[in-house]
Amino acid sequence: MSEEAILDGHFRATAERVAARSGPVLVLHDTTEFSYKRGDPEKIGLIGKVADYRVCGLSMHSSLAVTTDGLPLGLSAIKFWTRDKFKGTAALKKKVNPTRIPIEQKESYRWLENVRQSTARLGADRCVHIGDRESDIFELFCTAEDLDTWFLFRTCGDRLAGDGKHT
Image 1 (cartoon, helix red, strand yellow):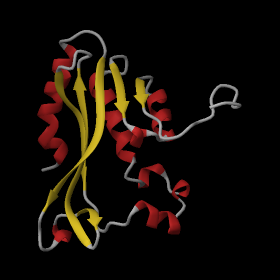
Image 2 (image 1 turned 45 degrees about the vertical axis):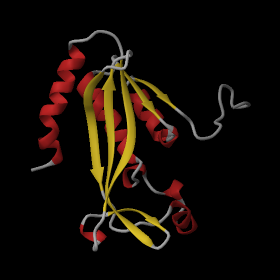
Image 3 (image 1 turned 30 degrees about the vertical axis):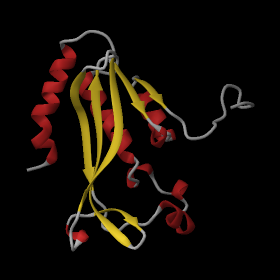
Image 4 (image 1 turned 120 degrees about the vertical axis):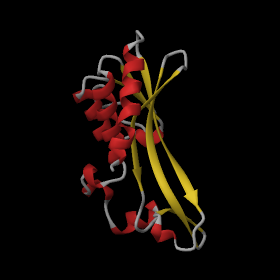
């Protein structure tokens, strides 16, 4: 049994609720973690490290469809994952240049997958995808543009704009 098969009915019900309404639908994307206390965290997976204590659990990136009035319509995409090992971002940057790793091999690829799945389920012309600073990913901007869907992503840093002479 796959997570997709388990959630399929919910995704279809969300799409039906969206189809029954008119106007744009906000698709709120965010990540959360479920932590569990276990003697052997590797049996579940790792989500982080606090001092010398390894935190085990699951990470979940979800996409919640809501009306512009804030009425929840349901989940339009979801991605669960765990880590075999946890290394902090700062430690990884000392060993690997993150710009040299294809987006498909990064955890941040979940943003692209959820935008694609939500858009396919709900319709490109209806969706306004919304993400926090973690969604500041060039490939995500390109994906939303390629899907001809709307998006509002909070940026993490200044980017060149217009003629490239200002941010």
